[in-house]
Structures are given as structure tokens and as C-alpha cells.
Length: 63
Image 1: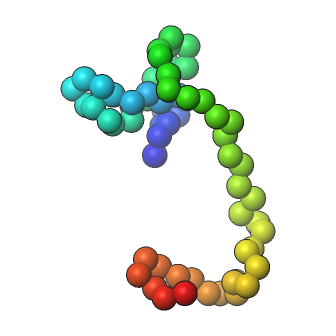
Image 2: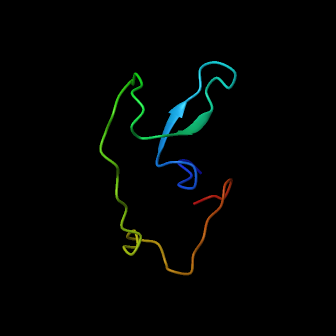
Image 3: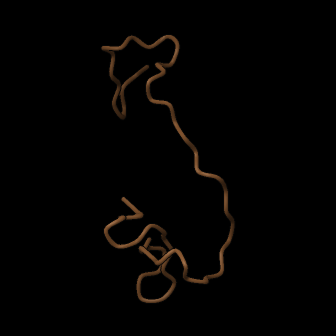
């Protein structure tokens, strides 16, 4: 996934040779942007109500 911290902490979307592809960028690069929003933090220790801990569903399963 991106960003790959081995190559930088920020990402940009390509418009030339790789249009629409995510690329790692230096976070100090001054680039135009469409929008920004705060990062979402998910608490994966909380189980949703109504789901048993040992129950798993996959794509196409009827729930």
C-alpha cells in the first residue's frame, strides 16, 4: 500500500506517464491538491454489535 515509508511518507497521483497511479513523494514537495482531510483512526479492538467473534464473511456471502 501507499505511502510506502521506505520511499517517503506522502503520496501523489500521477498525471503523465502513470495517470491515476499513486506514487510516493517527499512530503516537502509543493504540489497542487484537490482536497485534504484528517486521517481516520479505526479502533479494531471494538467488535460490531451482532457479529460473533468466530464468524467471518467474504465477498458474495449472504449475510
